[in-house]
Image 1 (cartoon, rainbow, N blue to C red):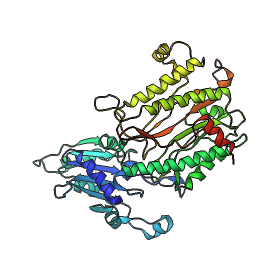
Image 2: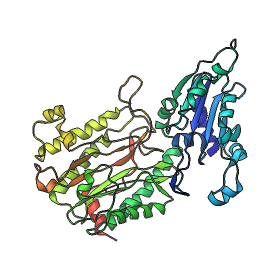
Image 3: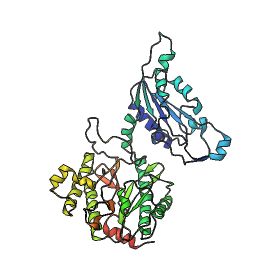
Image 4: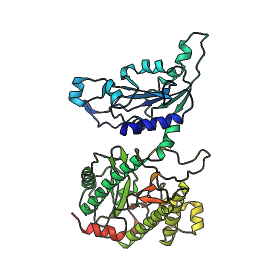
Length: 441
């Protein structure tokens, strides 16, 4: 079933390409952490999406081939079998395994890449490449012109175009299959346990690093060996840094804690944020700001249905939060004035969502071919994450509101008739949070 899934993806891609296409997809290489110690390997997601091959130093070639029923051939280049290396670093599929296990029509040692590529790049005129790290930046122009420069003067010349594969592939990845949705749901389920574990472990004096470790331990019990991105465990004013990663401070009584953390399961991400008081009880100011952000989030979620405009979710969040900030006295002017001048952006400093999938900020356009905001479709998965941030430096704001960042983020699936909030089981209302935190570990 799995090999068929990858074959179906390759076929769908090739059906979207013009005649005489040749596709080069570069996998990632192993990275060194220190001397002979390597980082845990993580494959390029475009490569993995189309091949399922999860070893370093591999390249896939897809190219028009009229002799095939599918209309294309698939060649995989990878590391050869090596008994000594495999004893130290694990089993390799090798050239034979690339064919028998991963469905390649043929396979070669990665050292033979250029020879194999040029031998198959015959009358193909449309070259597509996926090489985000620029591994072949210095070679691709030579590949494009090789035929013209190496053939006799009276041979028909091939004038090839070069296009990033992302232009075709990334829009396809926006709509998730049932298999992908199941993986994302499983990652969210694991993260649910992780967030609840952190809520229960949170108290004054605890270090942010311990809470980060508590999240990782909890999701590991559900099969997650990775997080989708470095955990953000930010207490007090640290939460006003959107991608705070130090996770080194002790929590203080009276502070709020923002935790943005998501487990990754079998290469599919979750991305969830919760914010709550370190001591488990909201002050009046904390509660007012928190419930304003939650109100904005719920208003945006309510709009999620096929056909809705992507940007309407952001506009909804901004309108709700701007009105609330006016009512709290943190912004001045009418709602019309505030929206026109965008003065709300002082406290609402980021967009309110992104696609979610193999990448935590998953690939794919947010606009259609005419430059208009994309309409929502069944099978899309994304986050909605409004936030309000008032740093300690905002001395013109009442002190009760200073030194806190509040963000609430849920993972949303568009269904045929509306939506599903995949992360709804992680406490999000004031009462739910205080109840869970009262049962501290």
